Figure (cartoon, rainbow, N blue to C red):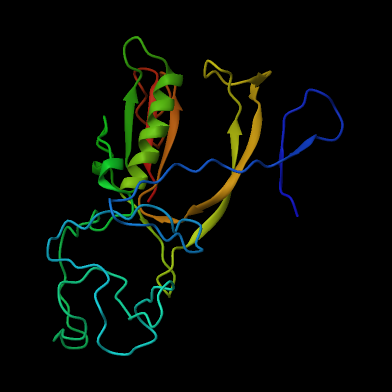
Amino acid sequence: MPRFRLTSSHTKGPTPMEPLQSQQQPEQTWPTGQTPNPGTKPNAGQVKPPHGNPDAVEHALLKQPDTQEGGKEMGLVNAPITSLHPTSQPQGEADAEIGEHRIIDNANLQLNHYLPQEGHTKFNYPFEDLEFGQGMFIPVEKGSTTDALMAKLYKQVDQYRKQNSEIERDENGDDVMQDIAINQKKRNEDGTVQMDGDKPRIGIKSGFVPKLVGPSFIVKAVVKGDKITSGDDGEEADSDGALVIRMG
C-alpha cells in the first residue's frame, strides 16, 4: 500500500495528498579492495569506521563449531565460521575466568564509533561541559540575528549528539531502528521559511533512522529581559540570544 504525506493548501476542505517520494541516500565509499554486502537491515550498507588498533583482526576464524556465534559468507560453499568483531588472538584461546572484569574511568566512546572520524567536527561551544539540567546562554553575535543563531545551534547540537551517541542494539546485537516523521518547514530558494500568517508551512518527512543512545539537548530562543534561570528571582538575559539546556 503506498504511503502518503500531507501538503500545504490555501483552500478550505480536504487536504490534498501526494505520494511520499523515496529519500535520496548519501553515496557510501568503501576502502580499496573491499566490496560492501548491504544485507537486509536499513543501515547495513553504511561505511564501517576503521579500527585504529594494528593488532585487531577482522573476521577471524572461530575454532569452536558454535552455530550461535560468528558469521558465514553466504556466497561461499562450506564457508568457515568467522568472528563478527575485531580480535587480536585466535578465537577460543582466551583464558579469562567467567565474571572477570575491571571498572575503568573515562571510557572511550569513540572506540569503533558508528560515525567515521572524518564525519566528526569541532564546535564553537562547550556542550560537553553541561551536566543534566544545566544551561548555556549564548548571546546573538555582532551583526547577526536570533534566527541565524538558532539555525546554527540546531545544527551544532544535532551534530554533537550524533558524535557522542551510539546506536542502540537489541538482545541479539542487531541495530535498533525507528520510524520517525518530521514536521519539516517549507523553505524558499533563498532559505527563508514559507509562512501563512504567523505560522510556517509544513510538510511531512518520514523514514527509518537508527535509534541513538546518548546526550540530549533543547534550544530555546531568548529575548532580552527573559528569565534564563528558574525561580522568582531568576536571572534575566541582558541581550537577545539562545538558551541550550542539557536534558540527558
